[in-house]
Length: 262
Image (cartoon, rainbow, N blue to C red):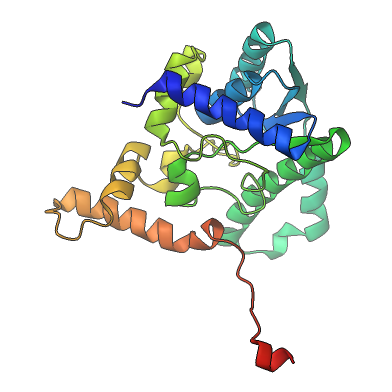
């Protein structure tokens, strides 16, 4: 178990130092009603800098009451928090109409459109960030951002800073408990809200966060006596890591040798 109080103080101090150096006016963060965005937005609010928490539903069948409840919870605790809700469904609908999605095979269409939703949200966050000179805050944890690459490139991966990206999902849960994040959020199934069938993150990944955390730790232990189940989990992690590695490394630059340029 991590030392939650010390970790919380460290992250808040890091955020304060970063925003002062950047000479920005505040923070903006997209909230989903999930534990990662709830913990991150709470930590950001603790800095006392102006903080916008932005909910961005897209073609959602029912109201996300967890997001609203968390926003009210934050506003009650912090006077620096401002809540916005912007329904981006019409933007998404227009995009679908323009690209004529009927010409795309179904196997690729769902993922492509899920990523479009994430990128529309990124554009919206940066609109407000540019207008107000704020920083866009990421909500990804360590397993998502550096283990299996479970985020949309230039979508929810398009941010200015990552406060909880060195914490596993389990460690984020410890922080949530310490911060008294709403119990409903702590117990909710993690989901990115990008799919019409409301599939969970773990449905998409094919493994639990706990299993992937374990795999991330033991991946380099070649002589470890894995059971058949452990081997399958490790293999799943390795496949996801390799497939999404392009998201987790700096953009490749073609470095041209001096003797070729001159």
